[in-house]
Image (cartoon, rainbow, N blue to C red; front, side, top):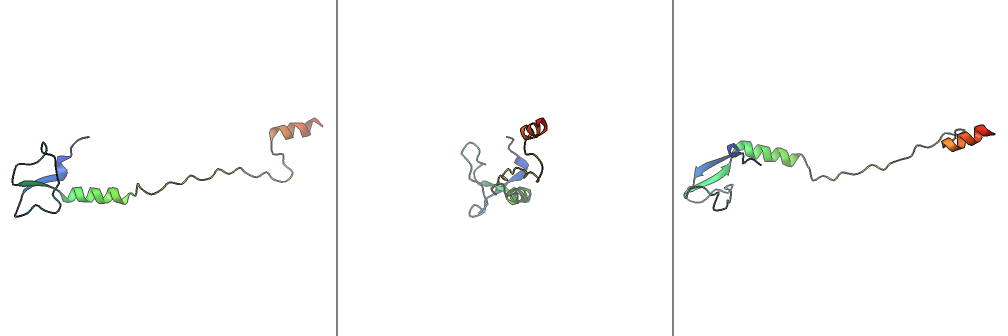
Length: 85
């Protein structure tokens, strides 16, 4: 999967790292004194994906068999037996 680097920006750390700063492994970490934070576009994308509610359960509709009308045969075999008489 591509890294989508345009959704993040590298900022200089003030006194303390920001609350939204990403915790990255050593091989992907920024230079000392810098942190990686999400852009407003990244936050909007996450809000959209969360709003999709992919965790909502999907229920299977029960399969119903149509009822036969009075005076009508329910199967082809019954129709063939009735016409043979």
